[in-house]
Structure formats: structure tokens, C-alpha cells
Length: 113
Length: 421
Image (cartoon, rainbow over all chains, first blue to last red; front, side, top):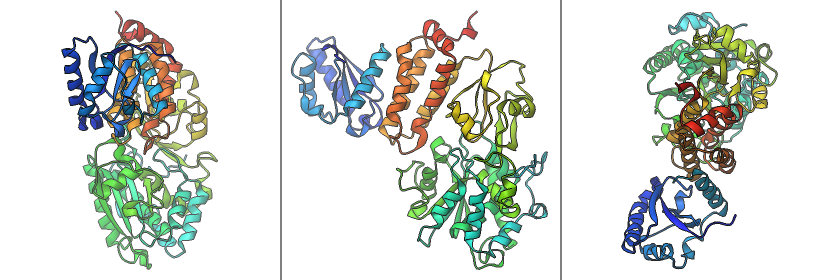
């Protein structure tokens, strides 16, 4: 399905595995960069994307970009993508396409995230 | 009908050894150890007995798998974790019929060639633990346990292991983890416990109720056992009637009895006098049976034909006026809480289901959201170490199919039809 190119939310998994790998800190660092740039994109917690062993995971919604294994060193590039720059393709390589499709459909159905 | 397990109706006292022997107790063991284990294995296979822990796997087949392993060290584990919400049947057996359970365990050990057995007992069951402990002492003193069981060359040690209060702690391989001193986490399968179980050795894990059938089957023969129940699923079974019937509690009845007869004749019907809206016939992972299907036979195949399951015979009855949305929201949150966290897709699925049911419950849901439930179930199937990953789907999808009006009302109003005004 064709998805909107828009990014309104950066959903960061806060479940046990992703959290233990530093997802909260990554989310806070992204939020700080977005705030400094005056962006209206919100960084919000979500539980869970089902890719725990590849975490920390985050999904840019509604665009549907899924980043896994995100490290603090990746934050500048991710923030740059959210602010209109290029996607960070290397962080999307390990994502199971079937799982991504299911998760995006669930996110679409949930509406209010 | 002739009871096989609950032979002392009205008495909750533990059956003393002498009383059990008066019923023919330990005769099966004394006879069995004079013959080759093959005879015992063949008897259990021919009886058609299925496990009473929920999955209904043929007991003889499971024993045969463990018996045929070349290892010399083998184990038998009696699963009395009983964490299924509402279940009390294993407790009744352990408290009131401890020797029946114990003799079944000893026979299983002889059949597969095990010399150690573990009774895995819910940690809240202090009385059951004490009664089993006493039975072990009495049986040992009488020569039915320890060295030279019933005068034979066979020896067996039995001990009790306390079971944690978690749903997955009753899953076969999680039971083994606990006995080995670890947390109650299911193992990836294969290998199955019959080939690599406790300490990596062949192990038979059966439910307490399953073991309790064994002595009488051996003493009276497989053909006698097949005289009750159905061809596919012979014998009787313990059913647990819920607190909203006039006579709640555990009853023993032939497999195949109608759900309506079970509730009306043996449970006395609903105490409120209301009509039955739906029934979960086999615990929280079975599918709801609608009020128009109450004549279904309580057996695997007829219930499967309605998309449901026999499980361990724990009934939950939903009364007219109750809202299914709140019921399934409780079930979804139960499985979310009980998912052990080992398997990513199970975590995602159970979290997503609980979020969907909560949003529908609170009026923030949609039909599109409900449509995700079967898709989640299809995606998740087989992607977990244990069966929990598939358990929330049947109750949720059946409730939505049978009572769409309850869900539509919640989506629109954010509360139950019954709570209006």
C-alpha cells in the first residue's frame, strides 16, 4: 500500500528489550534535536514492534520508515531524516517486511497514537 | 456412571492408605512390576487415555516415546502447577486422593524406566503438598516406593517441587526449567521432553489428573476404561463448574456429556436464573460457545467443530446481560501479563491485542481495529516457544463473531449496553 511521505510521529519502543538497549535515551536525544530545530514531529513511546532482538526499534509514522538497532551515534542522521533529509537506509536493512506490514496496519487501525 | 477418580463423593478428607488399598489401590502396581514394562505400555496405549492437562495428547504414545529412548537416566514429572484461572481439579485429587496420584506416577516410572519422579505442586497448595508428602512416606513404608518397589528389582525416588504462581510455569518445558532451579520459561521445541527433558534426559510430563487414571486402567483393563467416554477420547474427566452456578465445584463425568446437561443437571443452572449468553468450555484459551449451541458434546472433536476446545474442562459461563467486550478485554490483558517475554512476536501480539481490546472497551476503537485480531493471530502462529502465543485468539475472535453488537455498542458509546441508565 502506498503510504503518506509525511512524518508526524517518531514511535520509540519502550518494551523490555529495546529499553535495556537504550531506546529511551535514543528517543530523548532525537526529541532534543527536533525541539532545537523547531520541529512539530512528536517522539512518543510505543510497546512493542515484535523485533525485540533487533532493538532499539523506532518507526516514523505515518511514513512507515522502520529503524532497528539504533545507537546514540545514529541520532543525528535520524533527526536529519525527520527534518526532511535522506533516510538512513542501513538501519532499515534488518527489518522483516511482513512484520513491518502488519505493524503499520495495526498502527493505522489504532488511529490515535 | 461409575467414577474412576472421585470414588469417595462427599468426603474431602485425604484417603488413607488402607482405604485406598481397600478399593484395590496398589494392586495394579504390585501386578505390573511382575511383568515387563511393555505390558504396561501396551495397556495404556490400548486404553486410549488422553492427557488431561489441556492438549489431549495420547498418553500411551507419549510414554512410548520416552520408553524407546536408549538413555538409562529418565524422569517422570507430575504437573500440579494448576495456574489455569478457575481450575481446582488437580488440587482436589492431590488433597483427597494422594495415593491414586502417586500410584499412577510410580506406574509411569516403571513403564518408561525412570528411577526418579517429581511432583510439581502449586506453591499455594500447602494442604495438597502435605498430603502428597504423607502419601510418599506411607507408600515408602509399605514398600511401594524406594528400593525394590512391591518386591521387584525396580526402584524409584519421588520428591515434591513447589511451583511458581505464573501461568507459563505450568507449561511442560517451563516445569522442567523450574525443577532444574531456573525461572519458569518455556523451552524451544523440538526437542520435546520425551527425548530431552529434565537435565536433558527423556522425561514424561503429564498432568496430575492424567496420572490418577492410570492405576484403575491397569487394574480393570483398557476395555473397561473404554466403556465410558467416546471412541476418540475414552473415560471420564474432571470438569470445574464456575461460581455462578448453583452447585459450583469439581465433578467427574464421562467425556462427551452435553454442555447443557453439565451446567443444568450437575451445576444446577445459573444461580441468577438468567439465560446463558455464552460459555468458555475449556479455559481462557478456548473459543466461546453461543447459547444456541449448548447441546454440544464435551469432547475434542465436537468442540473443535465449533472452533472451540475441551482444554482441562474449566467452564466459564457468561450470563444474559453481561458484556463480552469487558470479558475479552480481561482475557487479552491476562495473556499480555502472562506472556513471559522470551519471544518477540508473542510480546508484540499480546501487547497489541490488549491495546485493541482496551481501546474498544473505552470507546476509542473501530471495526478496523477488531479486524487486526485474526491477522495478528495468523502472523503469530507458531512463532513462540510455547502455545501461549495462540491462546488469546480463539476467545477474542469467537466473541466478536458471536456478539458483534456488544463490540459495536462499545465502539460507539464507550461503555456496555447493560451499564446505560
